[in-house]
Amino acid sequence: MIRVLVVDDIAFMRIAIRRMIDAEGDMKVVGEARTGAEAVVLARNLLPDAVTMDIEMPEMNGLDATSAILANVSPPPAIVMVSATTQHGADDTIEALRRGAIDFVSKSSLFAKTDLAHIEHELRSVLRAWAGRRPVPAPPPPPPLPAAQPSGAPDLIVIGASTGGPQALGKLLRTMGRLRPPVVVALHMPPFFTASLATMLAADTGLDVREAVANETLAPGSIHIIPGGQHGILVRGLSGFRLRLEPAATEIAPSVDRLFLSAASVAATPSAVLLTGMGRDGCDGARQLRARGAPVLVQTPAECVVAGMTEAAIADGSASAVLPLDGLAAWLTEAAGQRTP
Image: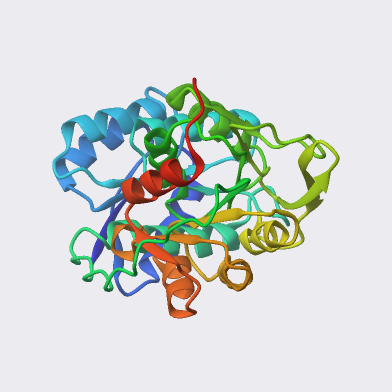
């Protein structure tokens, strides 16, 4: 049973989230808090597996409550931010991830500013993925495939991720450092959040991480995160690669498949990386890249928060190497070569 503490200063939201969670057979709300200060006290007393955390609250906001809970509660719960989809809300949410929150759920969707159905679908999946990892041992990893030997230095690196992606991407970038080719990232996120994430990663890694701009030439050594709520399609220009951005009509965006498929079409020697995430987005694109002989590096499923995307690629035969994050970074560094800072 996953025990959850619900934190929100609005009574309606607390009731709604409680009903969403208690409707599940393997989850139960064990407490509710109206302020961050109340949340810290209840987290110490109740020792929940997970906390759903609002940001804007009286007395103590969700950022400070997150820091206090993680510093004073052992074992620390998995804290999931429930955030407004605004630039201010996105900035605060990404800061919460930096402080140790493990994921977030947006209150908004393509269809409504506050979409309870969207919250319910996303929140239950995220809570189960994160908190469910504590009492359940990770399954043994599959036998590793032989490490891929690059046939030539990549001229482009594409990365795809979903649930658990911000943390995995941050560790990968910090470990691999500044590489020679441009890097493009498709990470399932709503609008606003990718700009905040790019700013945080640039500050934390010292790399040239930015939210992608339509039709901007991708400079060597730059890292471009496709804007949330849009799809990024690579095209080849006279001076190098560019990204065409298209509005997304579905919640699964930016699409990893669209990014990978376009890389297979326009890059001479692309390399792809598939990280943690739900579903099988990226599997079709990975298959096309492998058909071209391009390396597709997959994060070890046992290391993923959710292994749906990585396991789908492995089962499909599209993975040329299955490695933990530090192994992925080492492979890319050797294949692509580092640039002088």
